[in-house]
Length: 215
Image (tube, rainbow, N blue to C red; front, side):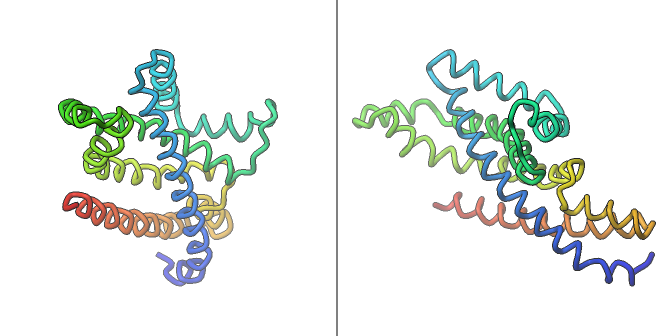
């Protein structure tokens, strides 16, 4: 194993790791927004919204994320959608992640006993107030760990954007393999950085989970 080569190229991998982190953060934010809207639609009293929410989940969970990225980035210009590779990566992965987060959020909400909402309504709270002040705070405690799992999967899924030439960790590893012919060292270095990012994220999720459990 060529340690000297790894030490020589690691600053470039650190730059790529920062791109991976930014991609993960922006994608997670978009995914959470889509997941919240999707869960709201799936729990709506209106049949059309429930149908649209279910269709969204089925479509984006039922097709490969890589195909979705290709359609958005390569097929988008045909219908007037012009995005650079990073933008396409954020939007494509964010919408895909939102489909998984939809079910996580919905599952946490329906896990709360219906009596909680009914009790809130008897106290004079509106349906929205009962949801916002009573149901969601309890559901949030149930969401943290599953959403942490979704985030873990999302960080690893960012490797897919290498296929549309976003210069993140996987793409950087592939680029240096082409010039060094050292795939083991390059992928090992990328893998170590992925592990560090995921470990730090996992510790953050664990801290947040403990925080919400005691509040």
